Amino acid sequence: MRLRIATFNVENLAARNSYGPVERPETAPALSLFDFPEPETRENVEASVAVAVEDDKRELTALAIAETRADILALQEVDNIGVLEAFFANYVHRMSDIRYGHFKLVHGNDPRGIDVAFAARRDLLEPKAVTVRSHHEATFGELECLSDELVACGIKESDLVFNRDCLEVALDLGDAELTLYLCHLKAISAPKPGRPDVSLAIRRAEVAGIRRIIENRFGADWREGHWIIAGDLNDVRERIGPGAEVAPARPSSIDPLLDDFALNPVDALPPAERWTYFYRGPGRTPQECVEEHVQLDYVLLSPALAAANPSPGVEILRRGLPYRVPLDPAAPDRSIAYLASRGDRYPRVGWDRPKASDHCPVVVEIEVPPRRRQKP
Image (tube, rainbow, N blue to C red):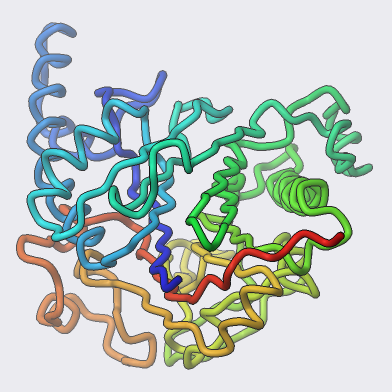
């Protein structure tokens, strides 16, 4: 069975105007220009701005999803199942020739309430052919992934491993079967004076937890299983600098998923094309500016799926990125005049916003072999 599988961090697909104590970053710039004598007035204006901004942004997000032409979607940063279904009904299905259904989402551990989600082509599966299991309540003790570094930071065996979730989705495709592990790992955080950075150690534990879940599910035959890890893994194994200079970034927290475990189809692309996210920000000194293109978003294939697909189709869709992002890492000109004149964007994409997301969808097209016969 031939399938197109995509992962996409849709960047805060929200049903709320605020995330806890922090304002929505999309509304803060406009609100900063005005003085509001009463808090209630500010809240009403903020809600109005948020709705207008969200409508512009979600048309672009929907265009990116439509361009994937995916049979199966792994999505990150989704608020709840209600907003997911409303988004597909009122945005995606007005642009895409594909009708999606089988929406699955389980509230995970993220303090902002953003979750991983699943969607699939409606006619691909019967409703009862999708089985979901959340692992957001798995502890460090259960998955045996508590490191000494985390213990030193006060983390206990009874604490929860996943910063969001590892959502296990098993699909009965008739003659074939496929299991997906949808993830959004702990974000990279900048070290703060007097406070150790534990984000790397947490991601390492999450990665060890994912491996343990897969090994528990498939047993000694895990190499022969038809499984995929998809999502925003929030770590890199190489960095593409200005001029398309590629530098290794290892060791990485995701090494255990790729060293003799799963295969990253994006590795087959030319080095300067292996990116899904662009970062530009301060360096080690106030005068230094860092620019890099990196891969944060992955569709990783099990050894059996990789063997069955020696040359899988791979696409990284970048037409929804804002104009501030250099689409060609090798281009030496980073000026506003140059970048603002580069085409190949969706209509109405702006310099920084609106945009489809700050991440790119990754699409992998593979052949899923027939299901394995049970050993006698």
